[in-house]
Structure formats: structure tokens, C-alpha cells
Length: 304
Image 1 (cartoon, rainbow, N blue to C red):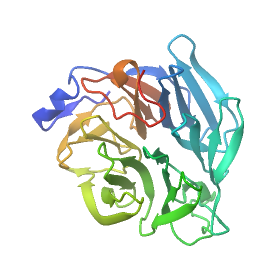
Image 2: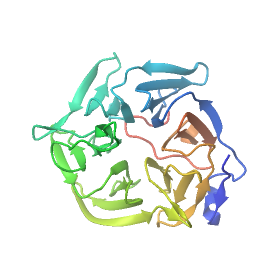
Image 3: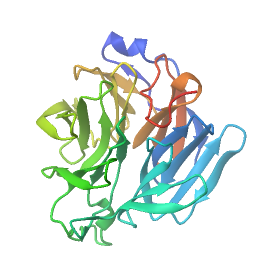
Image 4: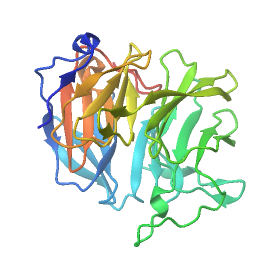
């Protein structure tokens, strides 16, 4: 068990350093894509390497939701509350409707297959932004098959007309993605470059002024930033697949410390009562910890 480490006293306003995460689900290979539904009081998450999706409830525990899952990874909701999923094997972003229908939202860019959509976030206007690294193109020998459109992109799906726009093409491994609380910035992990980049997000959905927000390193530890989420105050929680746990950054980019977890975490999500529970997917298991601060709400999945 890794302990919570306070590097800046501001962390103590967000979490009790003595609090320990509770394991709520397990038996997986590599958990990812947590998403809490305030409407249904259920946590959906992916087991990427197990090619499965699970749902967890307080009363029913962990149950298989979809297997095979097309190697599902990141999940979010669209503005109408439908489940949006990034699929490595399907090489698409899909949408699941309340009646169980699953439809392809996008699976190609200018007639060329996407690589393997990884993580996705929705804007208040309904636009969806997603990252498309090559992880799903990994071959048995560890190398990656070439993608069809020639880069590892960050895309926007327009809510107005469904069009797909390539926004950024110079990432090594684009991964986790969030929109700032004020809606004016887009933050994106670059896993292999171990940093989080920030962009100004225009009212027309375009990006500008790209810069490094945080270098995910501390002492001798070099993180591999994966998933991330924001709280309602704009603090950033980065899961970097390290033994330290969840890396917590202030809005000004200062590393506040680490929320300790029993296993190296790959993603996290807010949910539970008052949206004050942080759910953490970490290797074989899923954990939760009660926080002092509420998480950033998801458009289409606001706390009730």
C-alpha cells in the first residue's frame, strides 16, 4: 500500500492524508475507463486486456456488462447521457443507447481507419474530443503496426454535424484528455513524453497556444501519464502508472502530492454522493476514496 504524500499543504484541503482507498472490484488484467452514472448509481469500467466491460453497484457488486468489448478503453457520456466508448479492436468511438443499441460514432478519418481511440471527453456544447494513439495496433513482438492516416491524433467530433476534425498531430502517445472547468482549455497527456500539455480551446472548437502544463516527474520517478480528471476547483488528478498513486496538480501546475493506491493507477473518475468519491482503476482492481472536494461534472451526467 502506497501512502498519501503531501508535498504542498493545499493537498490536505482536497483529501484526508490518513484516508485509504477501498477496493470495490478486482480479478481483472488492466482496468481503465471508469465512469459513474448519477442517474443509475452504477460505475462502468473497462478491463482492456481482458476484452471486457464491467458494471459495479453498491448492492450488486461487480458484474460483466459486455464481453467481448471490442477491447474497450475510455468511457464518458454525451450531452444526452448516452455511453460513449473508445474501442481499440473496433478502432472506433461508439455510442450505447438506453435500449442497448450500440452504434459507430466515428471509425475513420478521411476514409482511413482510426488507430485505436483511447480516451474521450465531452464539451458542454455536445462536441466530443478523443485521443487516438497506436496502442491497439501493438503486435505480438511488441512493435506497432502502422496506422492508416500517418500520425497519432487528437480529434473533435462536432455535435452540430457529426464531422471529424484532426486538431493536433504532433503527439507521441496522446492519451488522457480533459476540458478545464471554465471550458477554455483542453489538457492532454502525452504518455511517452511524460507530460501534460494544455491548449486554449476556442469557441469554435479549435486549439491554439499549446504548451506543457506539467512534467510528470518527481525525484527519480518518471511517470507515464495515462488517464486524468479535474475536480470542481480545477485541480488535476493524473494517473501515471507509478507506485506513488494519483499525482495531484494545482491549477497553476504545482505538484501538490500523491494519493496513495495499492496498485499503480491508470485512470480515475468522480462519482458517488455529492460527486465527492474518486474511483481509481489500478491494474487488476478498482478502488474508491472519499474526497473533501467535488469532482468536475460531466455534461449529460450531472449529480442529482
